[in-house]
Image (tube, rainbow, N blue to C red; front, side, top):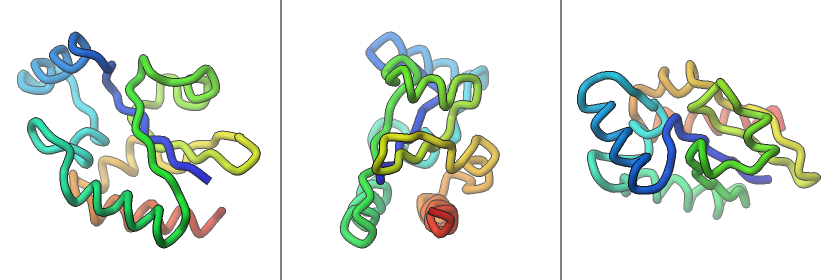
Length: 123
């Protein structure tokens, strides 16, 4: 299985700058960004969580921006970003966490991990 975090932002220099300034002025938000990144870099707690999921549960976690999604990821998440999708061994995608779940984590990697692990019990 694999988890796919979908940001509510586009990738690339223009997308990153647009999100940065939009977030700075309160016009744009992405609760997944708040969990994975500090102001400019990926949080070390996030990297440690990815390693725990990989080592303990054999689950890869990847992050994609809106404009980087595959067609299947787009179909599973369009209009519901940010979110986390789960891809099973057959390649089927479903949403495991939506934006309200991400909001409840309040930017905390440990709260996010707890939510992910609770949802994984269903799979």
